[in-house]
Length: 231
Image 1: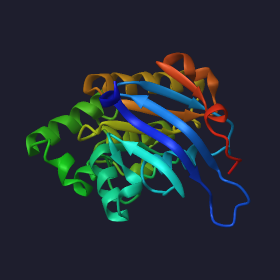
Image 2 (image 1 turned 90 degrees about the vertical axis):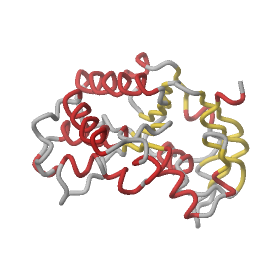
Image 3 (image 1 turned 45 degrees about the horizontal axis):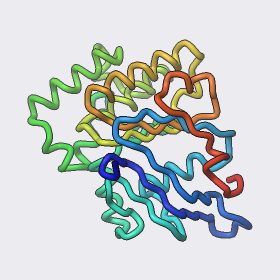
């Protein structure tokens, strides 16, 4: 059903200034509500560029990028920033935590940036939800600690809690498990899925590591959907 589509890409072309060919050339990509999609492809192929287009950080030169039925291409830069803050959770490969903030302050940052996400929760709910996420993700006694004092695995879980707070409809994950061993990667993804299933959140997870794809509801080859060149 059309209304069940979370992501709709049509005839999208993105080329970096000065590049000889497009990094992205995607005729069609549809992802549906509550799907957990694994998008695999080699490093440097353009997967991160695709996530930046889907989140409105980058604008394609042509085509339609619809998220939740809204065409990002027709929005102003400010409207795209607001839309991203309100509706998307982004888990970066390098986590992008704020080093001078505590674990709890990093987790609650989306509520500062998005009044819409903040309005879904009362002050008591925020405290309870941060506590619940921290307990579930193994961060229960670390809320007041600075993120620079955490291990890589702990920082990763802070990034996940931050992405989930305020119930965004879509989670974009850019190879966040690349620095973990296989057992920890799989455990991390299963924790992420548990949280997303409870919320009805859609997940698009990109990686070059195909050993993880069996956990997902659907897997896609980036090279098959993209006719563009490498980054």
